[in-house]
Image 1: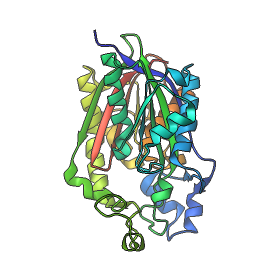
Image 2: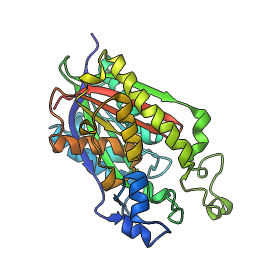
Image 3: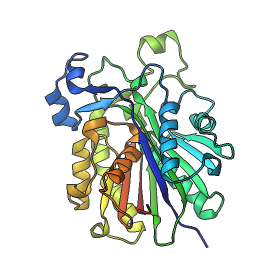
Image 4: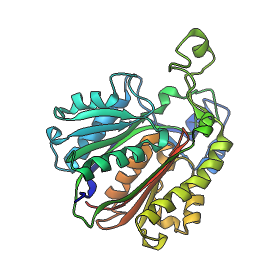
Length: 329
């Protein structure tokens, strides 16, 4: 019989340095009012010059392991969702494996931009269900400040750094992940990119001079896509689980823009009281957004064991995904 996978423990970690909208006013031509009214962001966390994605991921992983009462050597697999790896290879997951002493674990990175944590959860779920692995560490971690053009007021105000992690394992058959749904549309890939640094445009004087190693975004196109797909994706996970919107106790969405989150809640006919938002404190942390928000909701007792929770996100690719789970801790 297929096994049911659920969250056994959770943790998150963000850098200490806070950069407020008022700080941003000193860097680019913008204002606190302009940023907040259009995005819902008040501040974001920025990693230090010598802090890499694996450092944030390692800290989040250690907290999640402790919360799950799990030893590192019990972990069978580590998946790190990130678009800001320490380097192309070795994977950030392998670096985390070394850092925490998970000597038995296989390890790999997954790149699906802001949908990365959802994609990673879906993959981990299959391994648990099949009985291939018993305990999997799933991490969403980013240092987006490293690839932001701090002279581009349209993007630099949006992003922040952080990491969130969960330990996934077998749970009772009436708990855990009830459904997963993933999607992608590569025809919209040009709307959100980091053009250079890969095999298409290897690093050169021209790519650096033309700032092609930074995030490039067509904000209006991404906004239109997100408003449509967030609600649709969440509905799909609910339908696949055989439930309705009325059965949902809480939603933890990707934290990109408050207007996108509100539009999605409206489409689902769910009160914003049931939607967790920490966008104002952290900005868009890409693959780290959902696990950090989920950890905060858990620590704040906004969710409790037995609650039906929808995790939903979208990102570059274009990608999207959702997970419906019955909370198990």
